[in-house]
Amino acid sequence: MKIICLQKKLNQAIIITEKIIGKSFSLPVLDNLLLTTEKNFLKISSTDLELGISIWIPIKLIKEGSISIPAKLIKEYISNLPNEKIELESKNNNLLIKCKNYKAIIKGVDPKDYPLIPQIKEGIEYLEIGIKDFINGLSMIIETTSNSETQIEISGIFINFFKNNIKFVATDSFRLAEKSISFSQAIKKQFSIILPKKTAQ
Image (cartoon, rainbow, N blue to C red):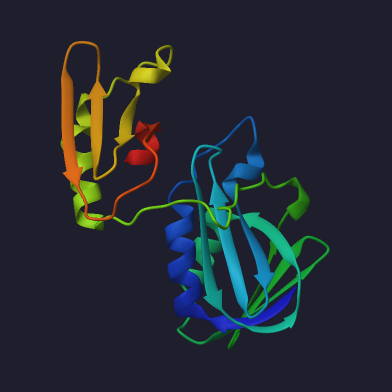
């Protein structure tokens, strides 16, 4: 992989994707970001096996490829670089970073060892809802969820999608909270999911 991109764009993408990463002793690769070229974009991905984030930034592509690198290390280094063009090149699972008078090599791992992040299939039914309404619905009931690791069904938010509204429900077995949000776009089929508390947060 060999690309040129702007420090500002790369830094913003790393800050967002790095947020869900926590120390994983059982699977150290989860402490990494996955960098992959896709045509004229660099895809930066992270996952904790419960939540996955992917962000694309525009680049000048010289050579295609991918690499998995420690998130905190690259975040700290990239954030301290000037707002100039950055050249990234991967060789033998090492990432060479050049920016003006700065140069660094970060040891990475084989991208094949990085967990697969599920892709959203084309043709799948979806609905659009205002971000403020969605966040408001979650935030009003999230504190009612249980922190129990044995009762997984009450340690998340039950979301029921009806034809013209969404109902958020949470309980810790002592309290019950419920919030409904209406929307104009009708969905064809009613369905429901349990959203884990950490993901909702």
